[in-house]
Length: 331
Image (cartoon, rainbow, N blue to C red; front, side, top):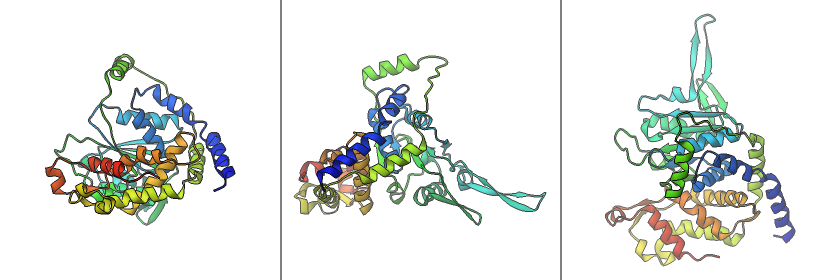
């Protein structure tokens, strides 16, 4: 690719991504620390990919999503998933009007831009699949009518890892539809002190100003598509994904028998798009191998299913991915 073109893309990234620092600082008015979470939320937003967030209660998962929606002038819906939730509560239903003897469509909360599916693993499978159909097709069928969902449309789902009582775990095939799965950790001492000073009040109102419009997000997505990714880096992505399927071919003999199922082709697609989106976030018009390493764990951790042998050895999919990134040669 000629040098000039990369320069042109760099200029576009600088122009269309000028709002990113403003957006970050607006979110940081409320959220202390959690830079990892905020960055990944923006990666998903620019890459048009849904995100699954896992962490114990009280780590500002819900708050971060709410603040993001406030900073983008978009419609936002929080849906609390419960065992008695029905698909109609999510997507809407037909209501009979006795006056004119006709059915009218009442749209559900899914008709919004940013959806927070809180505690997604608390709802039964039929509700999960209704949401996941909307995520995949970006449209919803109510009665005989099919309705397109607004753009940008982003689903951010949360789940608590500790409460397995009364939960319906998401099937692997459905988890695969999330571009990123984030694991949120506790803040450090300094961050927690800041959180306490900022939030320990009886009536704390922090105003978040909308600094970005949905149009800016859609323009940014068009630039993300144009970001340059070298063929050697594309081959690196393929090597990473293939190493999850056949570790032996990549001199990873210690992983043989630990992986039951490797990552699907969706992993290669999402790795490429998420890396471009991350480069955009850093203000670059091209992808470097470090982008793949930075975002790789979040794209792959829910796509690799480890075997019983791995579980017996206390090895998780994260250990497997880290080992693959150590061994596969960087271009």
